[in-house]
Length: 421
Image 1 (cartoon, rainbow, N blue to C red):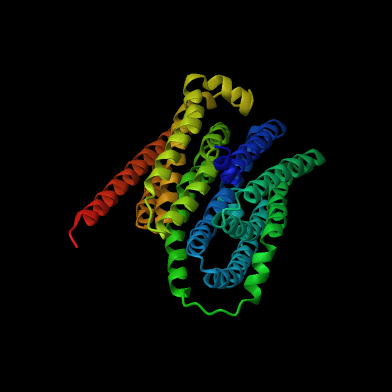
Image 2: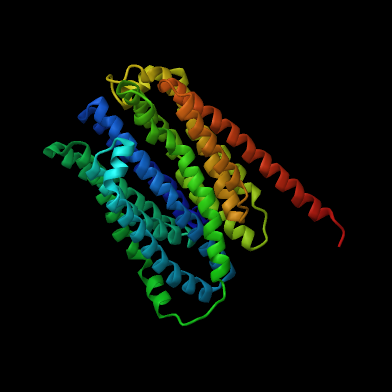
């Protein structure tokens, strides 16, 4: 028992660290909901919707990096690992710099289209660059099973965001200050993540090995992009579009519900990190992968499920506790949005499982779900509750498709195993 605990100490610390990071993130939202007006807070939530969209989008980098790193590590192929790190660290830096520069240049039109401050949109571009570097580093730590350092990086980022964001708001910088603190926190996390990765980066830079894997790696990154970009849009497009499709009062009401929902959505994020690494490693060794998936689904139901149930049983109490009394209409939205967030939290596990096994067709389903959700939001949404119902409907439908996809692929594997050779 003791030996097993030591063996999984890093994974246990990651679970604890993400809890701490989530508490710090909760503290940030708790303070900002009270320091800012409801209208300003709606803008901040929309900005975070875009930043989270960027962050989850850049998890294409993290998930693909983690999968390939775990695969090379499981096979003991250091030459391929070093070449992968050398090649893709440069590609990520160049790609993120280009995207960041594009956003900075187009900050004016983007801010007008989304009704957001131009300065904050500029910081979004800067944040995107650091988010790309951060997620590549986290992907390496995840694939190498360096979960202790990975958890520490997440704590540093959440803590820095709280301290810097609150300080800048108290200095009178308002929404721009709150978001500037969040952007700076991502940069701080990159510096911390570089510490444990320094030996690997040096070895990769000095490696002269030539391994013909560029085409397969690029293909996997592209397919992972479809999956994770679609998931990012699916779980954040409602928050981004809310200020545009709703009036200021309804947008503020919905922002409060989004804040509660993010607790449900992100509470089990470490479980997805662990599941992807475990699935990728087991799959590379030809071992069964379902057990880790079932354990992960059960753990998320036991954690995020409890939070979602709490929003159904006592929405008034938790709305007052988390976002304050200035969001009274959020009470009617919280139960619906809580269930939607739980469904999307479970969907994240399915995605981690499929990506870990290299089964990427689920990305097409997610992309279709995004299109449907956007159409419904633009055509049908009338108030905060109607937006939440749209999100719930799409979330449940997508969850069902993911389960059916798993059952079909599992039955196919069983037929192959039973076929005489």
